[in-house]
Picture 1 (spheres, helix red, strand yellow):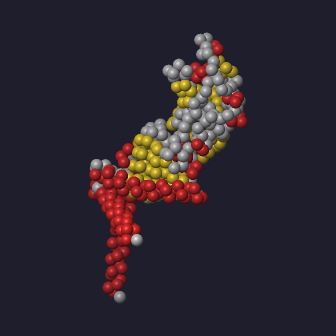
Picture 2 (cartoon, chains in turn blue, orange):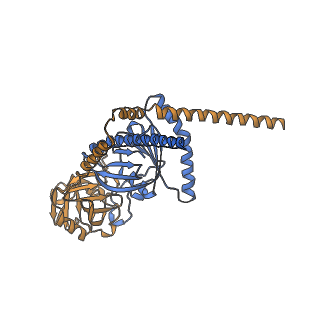
Picture 3 (cartoon, each protein chain N blue to C red):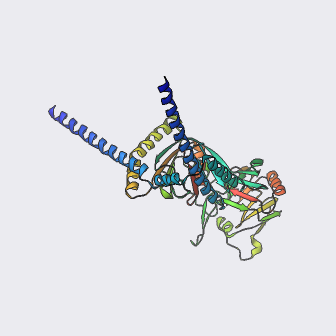
Length: 205
Length: 219
């Protein structure tokens, strides 16, 4: 009985110290990311914060949360804990929303709105950042159509991601892939606001 | 029958070989990607360097959060969501007033000469209110004439148009304004040439409470 108690105490001590170490590592990463965010916030631009732990994405400027968007789910793949701010290199989607070309002479009185609006934005797209971070945004599964397309995209990523990781590793480049599931309109809002050169910070889960 | 079995065996072998190859690539990718990535080594270095206590780390992070929070203006500021066509008049974390607005259409206009091109987006980022005008007049830029397929006038007086910007215009710089509109039915839609159109009552309120230098965040 006494021996069992010692064993349990030993396990508790080991588990406790491991957890403290994890906490410490988390705070170190958080510290570095907060410093990076502070650098982004000093400029008059819009930047993005993906907090995978709190499951919230923020559209920020000067440290102000201009908009909060709920992350329904997220999956992490590749190099652990991105510890820097990133710049968006490219956003990619299957069919990119196209801008209307105005035909001179057609006045506003015609009342046919030829505009690029939030509803024209895709809800399934990929954000390629510098430093090897790729964020896949997709809407949550609602109905058969989104279910099938989510299954199709998940399968595609399952096949392509290991190859991308292997290639990056062989070239000595980091590769981190994050899949973020959001409400359809929230995913559109991120696509609408993010543009090439936008800064982003991703707090790991 | 014998041939069919033979083919079946070949197909099964191909599937097995492909599966093994795929799993090998997957395992190698996963192993190299997670262990060999530079972030992993960064974290290890950080851990080695991290001799600070947990309490001190928490305090440091709280301080950094405070510094971020301190960047929020202590006076009234304006937030414009160009996607949802909403304007928020804010102080601190609180919202004083919400207004439905119209932002840029994102459309493109090309000069028939082929030398110039305009993209009618509302600019994003942080701005400051630079001017405040009552009963503003619109000095029509070149694109306004090109859009209407009209000749660009040489006389600057022919560019002046009164009444179209509503009762007030708040300038953000570079020819962009928060102003009133004749097309109130279009509020909530992206129809402008980059300016932010606001309904009369909301505009009057914004004009009254937001002074010169007020920060405007557009996203």
